[in-house]
Image 1 (cartoon, helix red, strand yellow):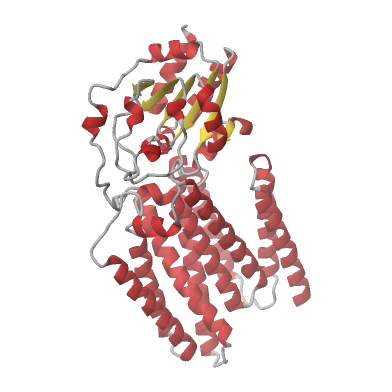
Image 2 (cartoon, rainbow, N blue to C red):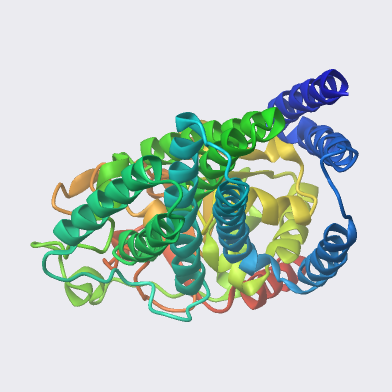
Length: 463
């Protein structure tokens, strides 16, 4: 029986790997998702058939309750809240790992069985990582949902306190190994890790939330892998390792896209330190803003041969993706080439803009990465920025004292004409003015994103 279970787990692991490979490209993403889901289904069914399971009542109850909650969330959660949803799912994964590892430790001690050192070390790792993941994810959720302020929360001695808590957590891990019969040490560890999870997340500002979500996703995988060692479950070890590794890789990619190290994100993130020599909004914008109407912008678009659209979080807030697709179709029908420039950290989670535009059935080949679209912008007639701010701010290239200094941006300022759709001149997450708005080749269209695009569609049709 054990050999058959491990063989099924091996098949599941292979499906997970092929699934991840499929998720690396939009055209194969659906197939990759189905492969991964199939692998998980096999793993769950095989685990449920394991003869070590004595009673299925609680399992069935959990399945019913969890499925009901999942169905409601799938139907009710709006697209703009997907980052918050992902943060919660990461947190629940970490909490589940910590609770299962704790239950396994208690069960082993009650049975008066000796626990091997590797199991005890894995138990401590699961409690530490799981506690940090759960409470860190709750803080990320609260910031994204604006239950609490998205601004960094800083206080004197913060890093020192975090270091002391980490040391205390490691001591608790050691005591679990040294004195496993006293299971209270495990719950003390989880409590310390919970406080640490809150404190390491509150100083991170909203601009860094995509990186934080990716990192917490990796933590949830590592917690699951540690719990797999506790339970000696090969499938859990493999699945957790894959999630942990892929999350770390994605985090590294996003940090590179921001030209920052992970340590800088965690300990000195955007917004955590005010720029010392940043120009004021009045100095940047005074007398230089050129507001335009839908009709004026439509006349600019009339003769455009190439149009690049750069979306940001404001697109998600206004739910303008379907209207944007209609505008693109209208311009293409008039002979224009329309593509979309996607910045790696636009929005509030990895791939946020890709998901939104896919929902509007924008063809995958029109979604260009930052390097691709930057090569086209000098030969672009019109660049339309809708809801983006920091990822198109030229200060990243020109001001070494800026909070976003050195961050690769989409160079929309190099297009012949730039149209910025925005409600106001309010700054992005970095909290600094954007000289793009005052540039000679920029037209500001002050409006809600969805209404603005709708007005542009009507104006273009009337040409």
